[in-house]
Length: 179
Image 1 (cartoon, rainbow, N blue to C red):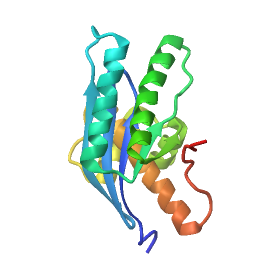
Image 2 (cartoon, rainbow, N blue to C red; image 1 turned 30 degrees about the vertical axis):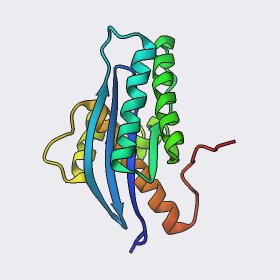
Image 3 (cartoon, rainbow, N blue to C red; image 1 turned 180 degrees about the horizontal axis):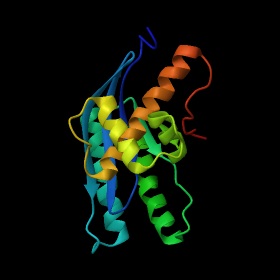
């Protein structure tokens, strides 16, 4: 059986300062099981340091509660809106820091890699990705909010990438290095 020895809990994170989506899946061999999803939100009236502190505390709490063996985070997508890119980068940074401090290995995936893994088409639209997340995890409806569905998609992407590299011995999902 493909990847029959693999058992892991994966926390997927879709970074954002207003809403940080997350999803947890459990991989047992070739089976993927839904665990939970949600979002960490911060009020728009809060200053950036307070928002980042809330996000850090939230991710830390998720790691303590679900005890993932891997955290998969979406890489920053270059956006023409520089302000948005900077704030998403800050949110991404606190997620990476929380995982690092907890001693959990972190993996990064581009939006293109996530779409390719979930739908087999790197240019799939958001609705196609959400529908495939629903189908792959056997859920009755598309996870809400959208950011949480994205968090699940990132976790699934890691599970698929990890399973394929374990089964074939070729390639390895790119873990962030601690240099």
